[in-house]
Every structure is written in structure tokens, then in C-alpha cells.
Image (cartoon, rainbow, N blue to C red):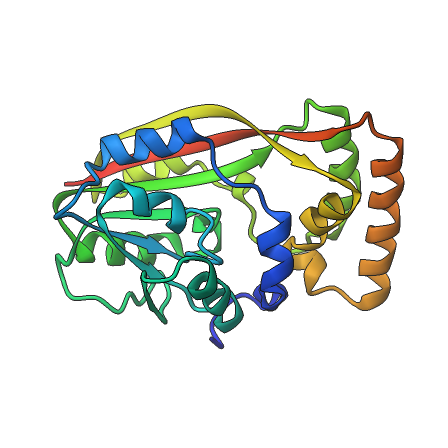
Amino acid sequence: MSDLHPATRGFAAADVYERGRPDYPAAAIARIVERLDLRPGRTVLDLAAGTGKLTRLLVPSGANVIAVEPVREMRAELERRVPGVATLVGTAERIPLNDGYVDAVTVAQAFHWFDADAALREIHRVLRPAGGLALIWNARDERDPLQAALSEIIDPLEGNTPRRKQGGWKTLLAESGLFERSERVLFEHAQPVDEQRLVERVVSISFIASAPEKVRADVEERVRELARAAQQPIRLPYMTELYLGFAS
């Protein structure tokens, strides 16, 4: 969709994103399911669902899951990976659902791409009274030497691309006037990778995936060097950040 940030064209390589990105820790999913009361008879919207990394983990709750994703290639990958879930074209600022249609909304690894004020208003619109919102990110744990070395490769290339670390998400929810009882919970997580999966983890980052071929090739070479020098087997540590709020 034309109003998306230019770096999102990197998400057209949806298969690389699917292979390279981690899942989410079971404890975080359990917290989402419990706090948002996901169960049969309830409806949850997974917004900016990507390839369905979170979507597929919500299905076992028994809730009716709807996925909204603007990037065609990501949506197609989601439909392959999570058959049976309704998928719709849309953005956080223009959700294609009626007022009060869902009991809960989840956003995984994506809220930093949104126009925050417009998105929160729109999310509030489609939520039923007291409906819950969960924002979740897998944040690379840069206390780990390999993750720190990856950041030295990644960070100089970000330009003006929106990133998770640029926002104070609990404060944003609390000060929006639309959500209350906001909370932040952290979970430890790890992603097992081999050399190729580590490369795909890095080149799936939007501003690297959309960079000129020469830049991507240089990144790949440097990441492969790190992978070969790393202690085997490689496990990438993350701190998974979960933010919760409820429509006021």
C-alpha cells in the first residue's frame, strides 16, 4: 500500500522473514491469552500480522482469529502457514472492521511502524468496551556478545526507519486517554540458528532487505563471518517485551 514507509518494501521477501524471525515464548503467549481472555466465543484481531508468527500461536486459544496485513507477500505467506484464519487487507490507521467488532487486538513486532495516535484511535474503535490490546516485540538482547556484534552491522544502516526502541509504549498507552491499566512484562527468549538462519535473521530486517544489493551482500558476508566464529550451536537471546492495555 502506497502510504507505508518505503522500508516496508523489504517485507516482500516474506519467505526470508518467515525463516529468519523467531517465534514468541510460550509464557508470553499464555499471558496474552489469559489477560485478553481469549477463548471460544471471543474474537481477536492480529493487526499487521506479517507471516503469522503470532497469529498461529493465538489459534489454539479457541478464539476466532482475524489477521489484517497490508503487504501482499506477507499476507500470502500467512495464508499458507495459518490456513483457515480470515485474512484482510488493511492498515492500523484504517482497519477494515466495524465499530466494536473484536474483543481483543494484538500487534506483534509492528506497532513502531504505525502512526501511533491514529492507530490507537482506530484500535479503540474496533474494540468492544474494556477490550484488551497487546503489543509484543522480540528485542535482541545486546548484552550478548553476538547480538552486540550484529548491532554494529545493523544500526548504521537504519536511516530514518522506525524501530521498537524509539518508543515508550507503556507511557503511550497510559497517556492516550483511550486505554487504562497499562502494564509491561518481560520474558527471556532464545532463537536457535545455524549460519544460514542467522543471515536470514539479519537480512529480513526491513531497511537491510530493501537496501541495494551491494549493501545486502556486504551484510551477509559480515554476518557469515560472525556465525563461523561463534560458539556452536548458536542461540540468539532476546528479551520479549509485552505491553497490555484495556479500552477505557
